[in-house]
Length: 192
Ligand SMILES: CC(C)(COP(=O)(O)OP(=O)(O)OC[C@H]1O[C@@H](n2cnc3c(N)ncnc32)[C@H](O)[C@@H]1OP(=O)(O)O)[C@@H](O)C(=O)NCCC(=O)NCCS
Image (cartoon, protein in one colour):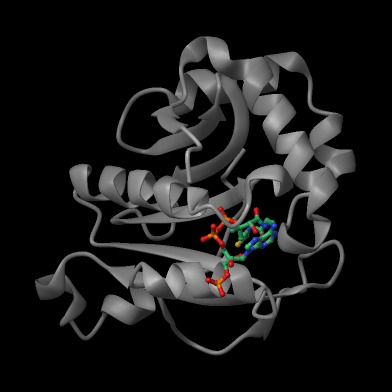
């Protein structure tokens, strides 16, 4: 396609880039995310600096930024859910409208899942609005399967419903009778 994308792990000095890409995502696609533009806009600079620093290193949390010609044009977060610490949770996936349909989401997903493998996660889970077919199809193409049944998320400020999807990474663990219950441990908002 001739479009050069670069995906890289966030660095400590990326706080402003993270803020701009995340606020752009929430403004563009409020129907896709639990967090709201109002809440995230109100976060002080210190929060964004702490988040960029935390996600730049270590095994628990990360962010990958998608860049085109050096400008941030998409992102994905991956973090360790405290109630399911052997898993990683994928969140905040977004590709700017101008560069959609070019496979950028797949590049971000490959980076996120590759990172989860390197930190020895047994699986990657996510929550997607089930009518968001572009997203559901990409996740399915990358091996994520719908699990459980969509349940109304009463914590969502807008009352949206999310469907859990799961990518099994450790097949031995996945055969354990407790695997699915652990994978579906309740969602808590630890992305920020
Ligand atoms: C979902 C999303 C990340 C996909 O990113 P992407 O880089 O466009 O992904 P792809 O290039 O693989 O294209 C995905 C689909 O959109 C279609 N598409 C093509 N051009 C498009 C365009 N201009 N705008 C939207 N979708 C387009 C593709 O053909 C493809 O369809 P398919 O699934 O039938 O093959 C992106 O649409 C997005 O950021 N949406 C808003 C935020 C969101 O919903 N995030 C997911 C939260 S769980």
